[in-house]
Amino acid sequence: MENILEVKDLQVSFQTFFGEVEAVRGITFNVGRKETVAIVGESGCGKTVTANSIMQLLPMPPAFFKGGEIFFNGEDLLNKTERQMQEIRGSKITMVFQDPMTSLNPTMKIGRQIVEGLVKHRGMDREEAGKKAVEMLKLVAVPQPEKRVNQYPHEFSGGMRQRVMIALAIACNPQLLIADEPTTALDVTVQAQILELMKKLQEQLGMSIILITHDLGIVADMSDRVVVMYAGQILETGLTQEIFASPRHPYTKKLLASVPRLNMNRDEPLYSIDGTPPDLYIPPKGCGFYDRCTEAMKICREHMPRFDAHSHSHHSCCWLNHPMAQRVNSADGSEGL
Image (cartoon, rainbow, N blue to C red):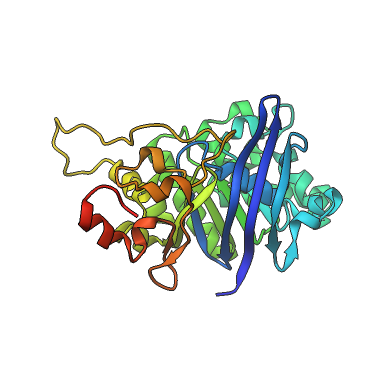
């Protein structure tokens, strides 16, 4: 499959009063054309920073790139000027943000907000763009679109505002859509409608999607591949069915175990992962999950494991996959490598 996006060894930090925070620590992944890739992990693992890095939306300072490359259609986005990125944002790469109420301009009518992008990126006149805005609201199933284009964001419900955000994002037929927690704070029924809408629009427009979420139910339904992030690093990546059927990293296994099951007993407690993520002011030398891992070994604390291939598409980063791990564990039961 041809890749539309390639992220290579991306490293992003923030300079603060207390020192440097290494938010993203050398991640590598790609997105194929017409493919949906889900990036999952706990809050603070670097998912949104990665998305904003692709869009070049991080405030600099305090953010800065320590290294890496981001290729979109073969062009390195990190070498683009702000003017060049403005031509790419909204036309070729778009983003649906987590909170539509703070992403939409509260002082502008919905129709005008869609029209502005069409005039800038598609070269339409305002009359033509106004008609297109009505079409886009109709496409995302906003009722009475002719009336709604003349209303303000506060006159819409949460689900309707999210539909407007999607309409804004796809108005210029982007090649890549980044959806950052697109269904957060929405009720379950509206969530299902938004996800079904995104799948339908992807089929119609042929765009690629990066789906950022911590909801593994959404991942199972929407994505082709999964990237598991923790403490600014990628710990496992693979096809969705591989990640759910045979997870290879302890963190991935614990994430899946924390999903409620339909066959749970009424008095059975929900599973949670003990401990907290590491402080990225002082990032760990070895595996970031060491302090919370029940299968950790001595080597995990001092050395970051390499990526091991379990198939052509499934890779994980864990010392338990090392050929010596089983032999040493079976010898003493606890010490590891």
